[in-house]
Amino acid sequence: MNSNKTKVLIIDDDERNIFALKAVLSAKNFTCFTATGGIQALENLKEHKDISVALVDMMMPDIDGYELMGLIRKIPALEKIRLVAVTAQAMAGDKEKCFAAGADAYISKPVDIDKLLAILHREN
Image (cartoon, rainbow, N blue to C red):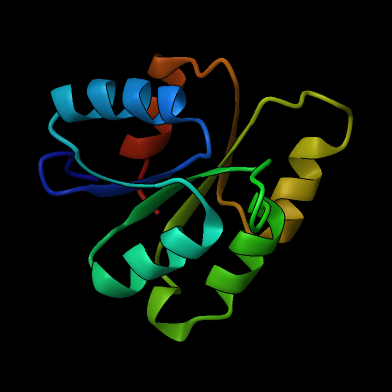
C-alpha cells in the first residue's frame, strides 16, 4: 500500500486516541479522517469513497465496533476497505471475535505504532 495515497478513517470515541493516531499517521503521509462513533463513521465512508482502511475501536457507545464492521461488510461499495480492529480488551477470544465480525487485522491498545504501520503497509 502506498502511504502517500492511503486514506485512513480513525474511528474511536476517545478524542485523545484520535489525536494521537492522527498525529502519527499524518506525519507518515497518510490522509486521515476521523469519526467519534459508528454513525459518523458510516457517514464518512459514504462521503469519502476512497478511504481504503478503517481503524475501528471495538468499544463505542452508539454502535460498537463489532456491529459497525458487520454493517460495513454489508455495503457493496465498501467491499474493498480494510478493517483493522483496535481494542483495549485483551481477553481470550477477542481476536477471533474481531475477525468473525469482519476485521482484516487486529491490534490492541496501547497501539504499537510500528505494528500498526506494518499492518497499514501490508497489501490486501
